[in-house]
Image 1 (cartoon, rainbow, N blue to C red):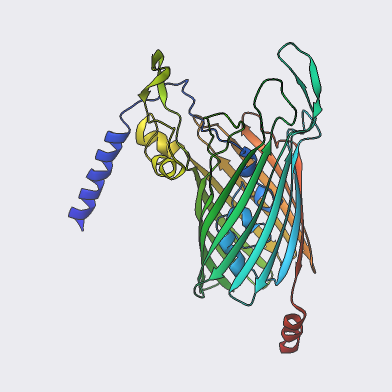
Image 2 (cartoon, rainbow, N blue to C red; image 1 turned 30 degrees about the vertical axis):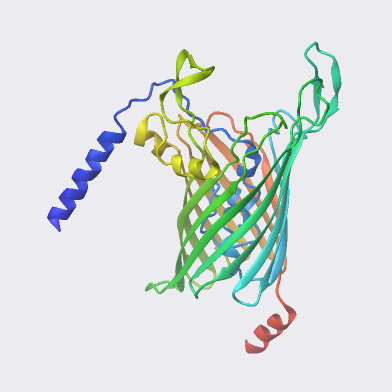
Length: 398
């Protein structure tokens, strides 16, 4: 055992030295940009109050965004949710993300769900190259999706989802420019594990683990003649949760999410050097690859090696407390490397459940830089229903 442990330690140090030998300049910015970034905005106030955690939290109507495989374990027969996220509220009042989602169980092992997200960018005045006004327009983006989730065993489930994405950033005839709305189709693949445990001193407890690869889809272009096509935000999200019922009235859970864009990292180019009109790469790899190759390449293409690859992983932690399944308070923290966007913030949230009705709130407190959601209140309305026969059967057995 000691020999094996020593070998593993030596291997880890060697790999770290090999991949981390490049030193990042202090002014290096390696933010990964994609088309339709609205797909990465948390649409619901519950996860919004938990630092954008959701891979393995308890299933609810908004599981579509975080891990659709959780729908197979949801304890309601059908339901829907409505949410709104104000965006840049400190600057304007007409930009935001609206969402609606609905789900339905099919027996005990299957579930289906659909959702719609609509991102409005407010009113924008477009002008041409000489300053002539072309008119006020309202750019917008939206996506519609559907998922099927199924239990494979008492503790394990999986899901697939399909999504259509529409992005209309320039909804006017912009002179000689060939501009059109961008469209894409994408898919999600997710799994979820739920294991009930017995721990002395606790009424009950469970450990959960979720993995979701979302937005595996076609690149997007805003011109019929352009050869430039942008990746959409394909994202790998995974993490565990631990839930404990302290007694019949008090429940506490802790969650961790790790998230990484499966999109090529922009390389570092030699300054003022071109070959056949194209920039010459100094560090990193060519980002003009297929979607599948880009997903694979995203794990090893960072210009500054393994250390930078680790910086591309966003970390979020959260805690959620429920009293009598009626009232909850939440808190979370989100961390992103200073080289990859430097988003760091705390979140606070609260929830209320009464009969079929649910209401969630969240509030964001930025640590680094300004945040589009700072000083704004996000909310979500939920409605959950049980089958009449199921409810009557439950009542008769009590």
